[in-house]
Length: 328
Ligand code: UT7
Image 1: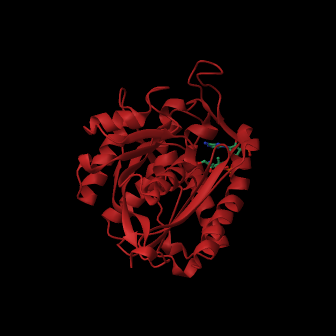
Image 2: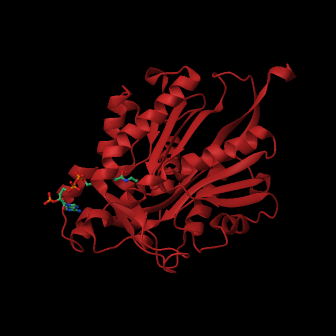
Image 3: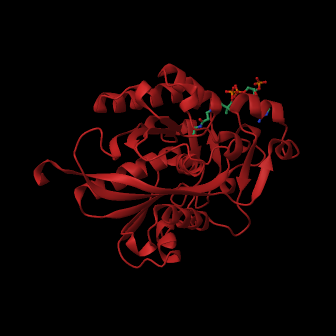
C-alpha cells in the first residue's frame, strides 16, 4: 500500500574507536590532587583514552566510520550524507566531516559538522533522520567524535578527571515502513536548548572571542543538579509521542558523563538498571562520542539485536538536551 508507507531511518551498523593510550585514575593522581577512590565513587570512571600527538578528531571519526560501514555491510560510495557531531574539530574550518568524507574517498553528497556538545550525537541523529525521512538523502553516516583532552585544563582536578577521547558512528539508512510504532528505525526524537545556562559549562576561548582554543570550564554541581530533570523530561516526551513506556525498552543507552546521573535518571523513570548500557567506567565522558561508542560496544557484544527498542538521551553544554527512541 504505497500511500500508507512512510520513510524511516534505520541504523544498519555501528562502530567505535578509542585511541590507544589509556589513562587510569592512578595516572591522574600523579598529575593533580585526586585519587582513584574519589573519581570512582563520584563518577564511576576508572580510565579513559587519550589521542596521541597529531591524532585528530577526524582521524578517530574515520576509524569509527569504517567500522560502522563494515558492520552495516555497505561501501563508503553508498553514503550520501555525513553529519559529524563534535565540539573539538581538527580546525576552525573546514568541517571535520569533510575530512572524514575525503579520507573515505567519498566525493558526492553532503558532509557537515554539528555542535551541541555532549548532546551532539542525539542532535546529529535527529538531523540526519529528518534528511532521510524527507527523501532527499538515502544513507548517512552519523558520527560523534571528540578530542576533549585538547581543551582540558590539566591543572584543574574538577574537570580533567572526567573526560576522554574517542569516536563512534552509525550507518543510518532510509527504508519504507508501515508508519507505526512497530517499525524499525527512529520513531521519535526530542531536542531542547536553553542558552541561559552558558556559564555552567563552556570553553573560555574561541575564534571570534579570544582567537584561542580555550579550556573547558564547568560548575559540576550545577550541571549535575539540572541533568536528571532535563533528561527525564525529554525521555517522557518520547514515551508520550510513541505510547511506549519504560517496561517496553530493551536498552537504555544514555550519555556517559557520570554513573550517578545515569542511575538517578533510570531510577526516576522506572527503567530497570539491567537494561542500561554503561561504558563510562572505561571511556570517561567522551561528549558527543559517548552514545555511539556505547551503541557500538553493545552491538559488538550481542546485547543490542535487530528489533530491539532502544532509548538514547544526552545533556550537555548550552545547555542542550535530547532523546531519541528507535527500534534497532
Ligand atoms: O557531559 C556534560 C555534563 N557534565 C556532567 O554531567 C558533569 C556533572 N557533574 C558531575 O558529574 C559532578 O558534579 C562531579 C563529578 C563533577 C563532582 O561531583 P560532586 O559530588 O558534585 O562533587 P563536588 O563538586 O561537590 O566536590 C566535592 C569535593 C570538593 O571539595 P570540598 O569543597 O568539599 O572540600 C571538591 O573540591 O570534592 C573536591 N573535588 C575533588 N577531590 C578529589 C573536586 N574534584 C576532585 C577530584 N579529586 N578530582
